Image (tube, rainbow, N blue to C red; front, side, top):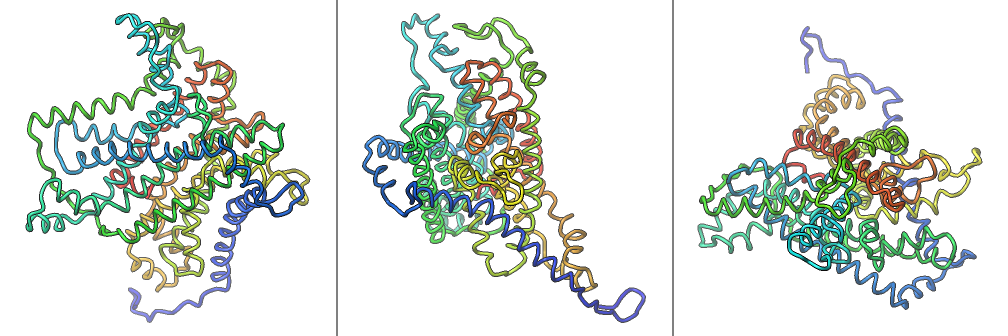
Amino acid sequence: MTPPDGRDAVLVAPRPWARVLPALGVALIWAFLIIFLVYPLLRLFYDAFTDDAGRFTLLNFYEFFTDRFYLRSLWNSILLGLGTVLATSILGVAIAFLLVRYDFWGRSLFSYLTLIPIISPPLVGVLGFTFIMGRAGTVNVFLMDYFDLLTPINFVYGIHGVLLVETLHLFPMITLNVVDALGKVDPSLEEAAESVGARGWRKTWTITLPLTTPGYIAGALLVFIWTFADFATPLILGVHDLLASQAYLNIVQFVDRRLFRMGIVISALMVLLAVLFLIAAKQYVAIKDYSSLAYSKVERRRLSPVKQILVVAGLSFVMLLSFIPYIGVTLAAFGRGWSLTLVPLQYTLQYFERVIVETPKYILNSFLYSGIAVGLCILVGVPIAWMLARTRLRGNAALDALNTLILAIPGTAIGIAYIRAFHVEIPGLGVALTSVWIIMPLVLAVRRLPYTVRGSYASLLLVHTSMEEAAANVGATGFRTFRDITLPLIWKGVLVGGLFSFMTSLQEASATLFLSLGGWEMMTVGIFNFYIAGSANEAAALGFILIVVAAASLIVINKVAGTRMGGMFG
């Protein structure tokens, strides 16, 4: 290559540090993952397979599998997870097909509203349902006042309530992934099917649905694991015979060592099952991955007026059910004197004053810890994405597997693993990491790292390597090339991944509930504590703040990523 002034190009010899720094960076990334992911999990399994004297034993698992209550909890957890996957699949796939393949009144509005249910953490959602559909909620009060109903209907308390709450919260995960997958389906494949007589449902079943397999399986796996690991929703709805609930209850009792050990065993078993489900899903996708890599322009079919009315009515009903938590939380956050009445009798800001002015720690801690966690996610996640997309380093396959594994590990298990791994003094400091507040952003960063990695990785795939090669040819170091060329081209992916990591860090409850000490509590812990203490209005006020922040984040994410947001879960 000849410079503009006509002189011959001079190859710049790489400086020694140009080779040392990348190697050091790779080593630091692996050290972070080994210390804060691999080691805690290994410690969890060590405790599960040893006795109090540190000797290897299978007695702990024998006690689990010979206990009828624990076996029922295992069976109930699997059934609940499968039931939620089935229910979310019916809703999510149907909505995805309507949004991608058909044109009807309000389609753009519904495409945005479909994202809304996912912005509230399950803990907030279940509170909203109890306010509206609980035994003394709005719906039962209406039925008793206007239809002379003598006893309230149990809409939510029990396993059916958990299924309802999880379904209405998680179906967007299926929708987003299927929308993303449908965008990659080559229309010519469906046209070829039609040319040989495959039309309507037959074409959908034999051609279109198999093409969405990778996206659908990714969403279904996350729905299953999310439901499998959620303990807050079942506990609030009075369901204790689930694995996650038992893990939480056994660990926090701190009295009976046998129960504490069984909590560790249950957590290890949850990790094992999640890994098995992940491996099975990846194997199934490997033999069914037919989708193309590029997004395609799909021509939408215009529905008839009658069908449009039916579609709009159906989607409106689903959205109404999905918005119940937000209605309930909003009324409880602003309302006073809401007891056996349809709506609150008065409205006030006093509950916000209590959580913002009198107990600001919940909000301040949430933003501080989540902000630090996002910084760590970007610092570690962007280089991981670059390594996976741009290099063929040894260990990349293991790095990708670890990043995927994080999505499968239940938050309950990682929280308990951190308690066991880091409740020892740090050499030279004389304190345990569990006694220092920094453990909170660390566990959040590990939990939400995959979102930043996936957002950055997807953007890197869209940047042609020739731009980076051109910079290298004129002597730019790898770091300078990344800073001046690559990063400005992938900033949208980093922003989306970072925002999603931030939003979901604010919502994290499973891991942080185990690690929070006095003064460290985040908003989700505050919601749980307020509700358990009988201060439901203060819990609702914190939930309302969470919803507003998450909604703002989602608006930005949707503007930047649009329908490609499904790739965050894939």
